[in-house]
Length: 146
Image (cartoon, rainbow, N blue to C red):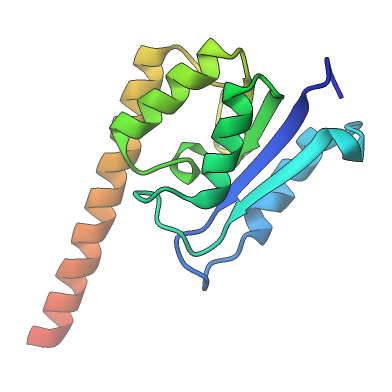
C-alpha cells in the first residue's frame, strides 16, 4: 500500500447477462505485486452507465478522501456514459492525483490524458454508443418489415 492509499479496480456491466470476467482478467496483469490489503474491487453488475452506480459512488468517496493512489478500469465507458459526468470524474481524479490505468488492449496509452483529450475521447465513446443503438434499431425495423 503506497502512502496508506489503495489501488482500486472498478468494473461495471450494463446488464446481468454480460460478463465481468473480461474486465477483471484484463486488470490482472496491472495488479502484480500489489498486496491484498492495498487492493479493493468495486463491482457494479447490471447497472446503466447513465445512473449512479453504488460501487462507483463508494469509489469516488474514497478518491475525495485521498485514499486512492491508482484506479484500474477496463475503459472509459465503464465509468459513465455521460460526457458531463465523465469530465467531472476526470477533474476529480486529476485534483486528487490518482493514477488511472485503462486495461483495454486496444488502448495505445493506458493512462488518463489531459482534460481536452479526455473530453474528445468521451464524445467519441458517446457517439459510438449512439451509432450502435441506431444500427440495432434499424436492424430490428428491417427484420419486422421483412
